[in-house]
Amino acid sequence: MSYVIKAVLSNPQHPECGQITIPFPIPADQYDQTIEMLRAMDLGHSADRDCAVDDVDSHYSVLSTLNGTLVNVDQLDYLAKRLDSFCAGEDAQFQAMACKLELKDIKDFINLTFCCQQVTVITDFSDLESIGRSHFLNLNGGSTRTEELEHLDGAETALLLIDSGGEAVTPYGVVYDNGMVLKELYNGH
Image 1 (cartoon, rainbow, N blue to C red):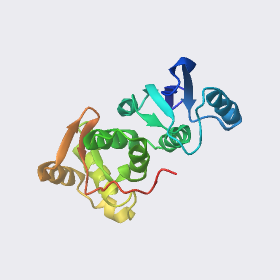
Image 2: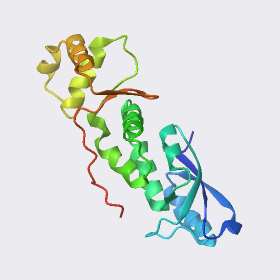
Image 3: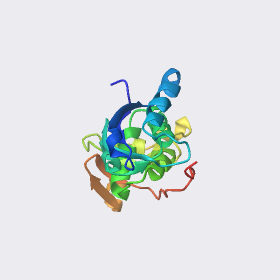
Image 4: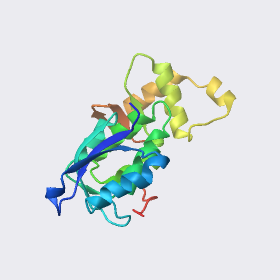
């Protein structure tokens, strides 16, 4: 897949203009051409949420909640760029938390990309040591001193997490928010 998000967009004010399918993030060398195509449909204005999302195709299936909403093409591009920068495991954190929070607004999805790394998602309960280490790192911003990690009893840490409650079961795994708060770091502009 050469895209993070492929969106079918239309102009709700002018349905006669049809639909356009755009892969995001938009490659830099194709940005102007893409905006020209959108402008031909009276879409793609930088300050407006003027694009109706008719369909979303993405590895991030939680983004299907954007179907039927209005978005700004630059916000959709920015979200795709943020998601494209994720490391292994962050996709599960993003999707599980988006599901738990029942997000439907593009601004909230963008803001979640800044803080979802704080949550712990368990997709496989067979390796408690790994779960505990991952949880410990999540609580410490993804880094810690080597000796702390060497002395960590990952299985015990995992069991304490599991016994603590507060989890939410999602299609993307069991998510523990670890006190994460969805802050507005991205204000929509």
